Image (cartoon, rainbow, N blue to C red):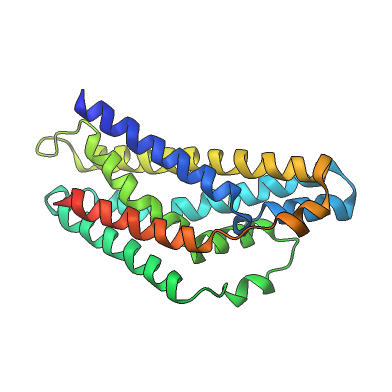
Amino acid sequence: MESMNTAASLWSAVVVSGVYHGVNPGMGWPLAVSAALMARSTGNLYSALAALAAGHFLAMAAILLPFSALMMLVEWQAQIQTGAALLVIALGVYLLINRRHPRFLARVPPSRLALWSFLAAMAHGAGLMLVPIYLGICGTLETDAGHAAAYSLMWNNATAAIAVALAHTGAMILAGGTIAVGVYRWLGLKFLQKSWFNLDLIWALSLILVGCIALVSAH
């Protein structure tokens, strides 16, 4: 029962972090609005959102899948979780110190939204934030490491990684897409000018918080 409650809490964290990313303008929903306004087409809005979702999902998978292979080394689980937690904390501290957005994102043409979304998620540590949560989910899976085959272990961990990436990206694009559709159909550009908000500070602090929680739970 306790394991089920833990798993439910971790999956909730996956979805909540996805909603948070979706609401954050830094993850790209204003670009979808811009694409639709320039083309004067709702279809362009949804195409842009699909590209953003694809890039975000690939970034999540690119970070999580290597850890799914590492989780085969179950005897090193605590060390792996500790290392991941320290990485997340270090990134959060770095983002607190350096508030400037990576310049290379501005060089990606608007026609390559999927690439932009992938690079933005990587630069902001969106996938890295999911690693401690994902490792916790792997810990709730009923797998007898002493008797399970290596292939079975890796398959279970890889499947969990893809499921986490899908759930997180789905929540992200649903939240961001809802705001984008609302701005495009009803609120307009004035909303972007008057209501622009930046969640960079909260994002950096949340990385540090998640890392600290993961560090404590690893021991």
